[in-house]
Length: 83
Image (tube, rainbow, N blue to C red; front, side, top):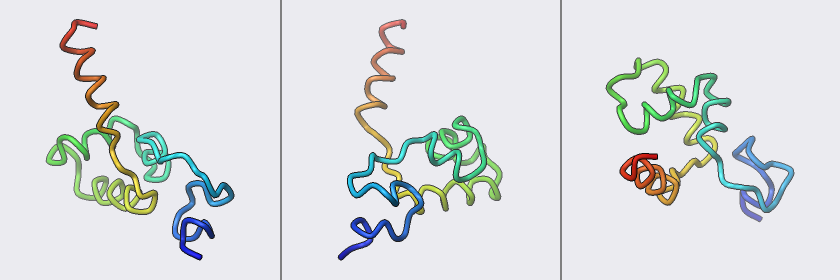
């Protein structure tokens, strides 16, 4: 049995064997920061204090967060089309 099946190693989805992927909101909640801070850590890490950046990076590891490239592309397309 691996960590995913037992729910070990992560607070996220511990009671659900088919847990949803962690979101930027989940990372922010675990790190105790805003979603904007998480976004800055991912996109402009030099703008975030080392202490906050470390908290966010730890939450990212804990939740096994993987940025959703499809969501990023949709956001970029919406900005370019003027929405």
